[in-house]
Image (cartoon, rainbow, N blue to C red; front, side, top):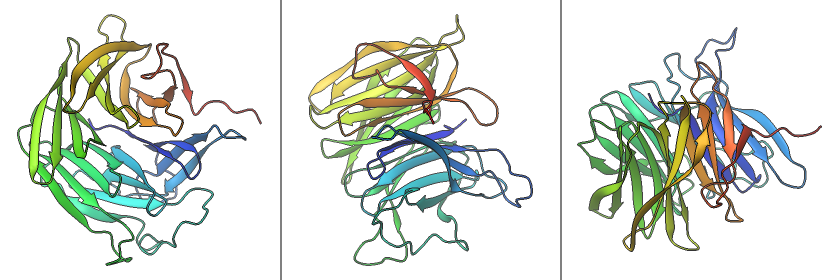
Length: 321
């Protein structure tokens, strides 16, 4: 089952964002609404649930990926019907000087990105420093990455997506995460017990094992810290004794230092999904979703992987009126 939250940080509102599908709304002839659950710890801390998309197709899955793009100051959301991958974008709830929207409107609230050709396993998205990338893992074991650059000089009317990676052989994979580091793209592929790194630049691709775990892997996320060139791969595994989950970090410097794995901490619930992101002050945060039917509860870890003390609480944090 694909990840049900898409996590990112947006500097234009200092917001920590978790995309998540809500419940069907009575009286609306459409599918699940897409919600942006976000929190800003700025001078006046605020948390809210913002409708990123009021409705989706009737056959929409609860699978979502998200990313912030500084080129057009938009939040991008990717979701799927099981046969297609679709996308939408939207500005901050408090827009500043973002360019006027020319693609997404009431008549076109979302657009097609690609036909799957097979079922969906998982998706992950990020901004690589110059363009958006969306990684898609299919049920036939094919891993593909599409790249798109908005507001280019050639066109301001349509964002074009181009496939830059297509690799087969991941039939046992369950979750993926994506990042940019050392001039290359990196996709982290989680099977039942193994994390594999797939790297790509130009026409070159390669892969290698990052870490192996005894217990079942539930999800994977990652943060790259440019200040020290370190990639932090966050992995959650199931704890068969307690019914909770254990979080680990596999840390390495691409092409320089091999991975080393350490335990971050435990949570007292079975984790359904996670996402990690880097804040401007260097803090690395993790948003986690609990395994639950419908709209899953969210939790924020602010003490890992950059601090020795692991701590977590509800997301968004409670804010005094």
